Length: 306
Ligand code: GLN
Image 1 (cartoon, rainbow, N blue to C red):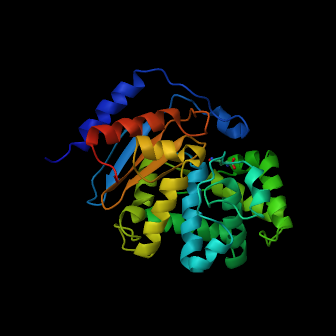
Image 2: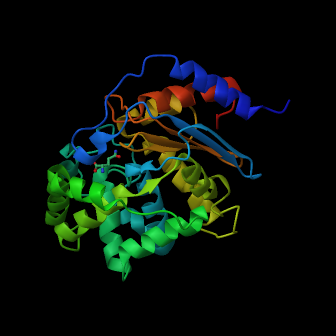
């Protein structure tokens, strides 16, 4: 029987919006704390070009760590497997901004989705690009098939003024030789990467290459080889939700990525991407309603990668 995704999505949305919205918006990036914390949007887009949304799915929000997936894809395609000498592919089991493992691991971050890992990816971008910000944003626009994607300079500046932990990590990794450029330049690029704004609809579109063996279904751009796309999905499954990655895999059963702006993108390989946005975060830094919605969605569809 063919599933009626639209119907399932609106039912789950109605159920969740009727219940209390727990969690809090992050206060350590002041510009993010200004958001209306009852925003709630969902978009579903599949490889057959079906797309539908509900709630605030066409409103732009700060994608924060979701952008780490784009930066990793850009760098992975250029560096190939030697990338993994500078960043590992193991779940960290600790918070996204934790410093503790870096000393024992000699400045090699556990994976590219914790902050330390994304800082190393930004350092590589500075090495391989003439104009990293411009090349990265253009890469994201091209894979989304939408030129209306921008950095939010206010959010970038707000994070930059308060990036003491990220600065500590970056300097610490520099002491091990795993950061080549000046830490200030790496952090400035990192804060811009986190400040990108997109809608749920744009995010679902942009992630379709990971559902489609590395190729964008709308304009046939081979963003990653199929083998690399498979590996990237594996890292998303094991590391996409920091120290809640096991829980997401257990409850939802799809590779995905969250950000402290309250967005979550999940991928059902060969089929679709679904994006949820709700700004209140649980204690692990993942969207409270986003997690609930996706758990209920895959329960009702009966579909997951397992
Ligand atoms: N910009 C945020 C930070 O560096 C990103 C964290 C996140 O989305 N998990 O803390």
